[in-house]
Length: 168
Image (spheres, rainbow, N blue to C red):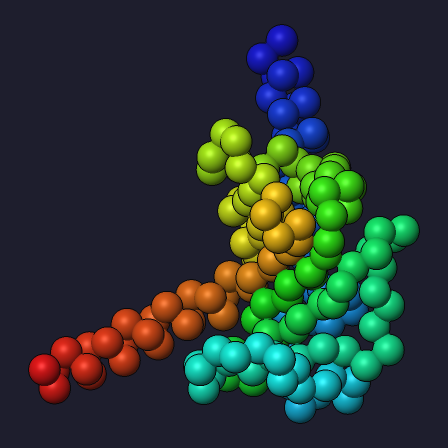
């Protein structure tokens, strides 16, 4: 009986999580260099003064996920490598549909606050993933972060902080 339960756990919980390790987002491989992509357009509307992070949209991108209309997809590159993606959308019904799709694909997720419209998935092998929605602005986003580059960013910031600390 224990072997049957263990087998079921492996088949339904562990193996699917290994299979859905996402190596790309909408056909773009995580970590690929920006110079290898021809259809990216610099996104000038984002005002974040971080010299190592650049934002792009994609030429000809369809503003839909399935049948759900979205506003825009932003692609972020850290040191010119594909690091993060954000899907921006409006209205609560779109949030509910996107959340249902994420839960179907990745499992229940983690809800940090009981009464918030936010879920996170930290156990995906190569990604951190989250979805959030604001009742005030009536807008939300789905955010993907490639773990290896996120780790590199933290290490680079720590090194930069050490250099600053020496000068203080």
